[in-house]
Length: 431
Image 1 (cartoon, rainbow, N blue to C red):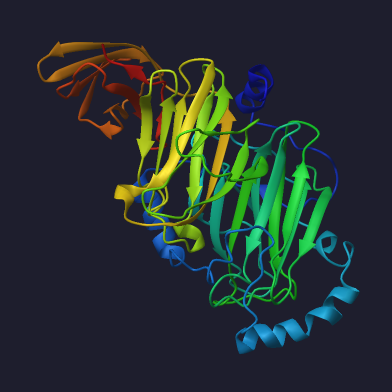
Image 2 (image 1 turned 120 degrees about the vertical axis):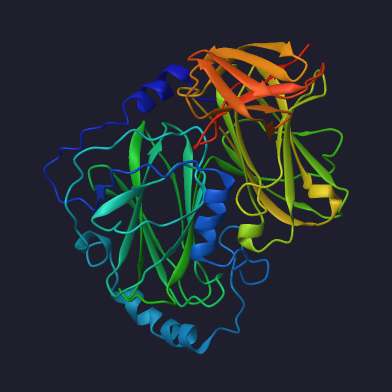
């Protein structure tokens, strides 16, 4: 786990001067795209790509291969790859694609995760800020188009950048991806081919901003040059059955668990240690990668069995939640099928980030039979009280007090979410 003071320092100043006098790959876009409510996320993805675009189940494992029955266009482009790769080098490839140096970064919320989003043009002279974990649904829409995405990296934490194109139904893109530091120094590059997609793994030696780029190997573009760019923190972990009643222990976060709900009643459980005040982000990729699983996730206190929060749908049918941890100790995250009606593979990413910027609940009081009073800090005019994960009609009495219309009973769990990012507070069990 990371140290709170170090990470908080990075977030408090994601206004970072980038002044080295060298050619760099991107300016950073003065725009924050993290978070957003479920309706916003669904509409974003609906405009950009089908919700199940992956060929078969080849989106499950990293570095997986597409079927060999390629489309005519992809096969034709593939036949030219060998010659292109023989002349391709870092000098002739990415380092020849120079762009103006970025001048600064605006503050970027890290507490919600980006989920499924669309690329936002222009992002070639200007890198689009993203919050991890994220799936960017994008397109290289014209010859020479390049897309860049900037995100904070933490010292010692692995980052994985994975492109989906060969595995994407109808795409003819041969992706060339690269990773840069904020000064434009090339850190890593990988190139796909006609049947496989590129993958970069990188562990940052320090807290810094990294920039990922994607371009077609032949510098071509058009309506069939679609991709998904998946960027996550942490190591990869395989599910180990049985983990339904006795949870599988994750030694450290962040991590991406590769698992499956093989039978509809199956529940997979994962235990980890967290520190009070940290924000936990739990993100499922299933439907987005072609799985038939309609997921449901929950966070539990294993000592009491209390469900502290749950989510069914956030990015389409894929689940995602963020919450501020209320105590230091062990927690359990479970994943299963909503109402036990579906099954399929999933990727489950769990990460811990500083709790800076999250609302804090300090007290919950029953004001009347139908009204609940919530006191705390960090509330806004768009703060919403949630009871057992369901948002309730809320009004703001003052900066530290919210009133919610709800009949509440002992054992119900109260949280506060700051819209539109859905940045969530610590949970409080009503007594």
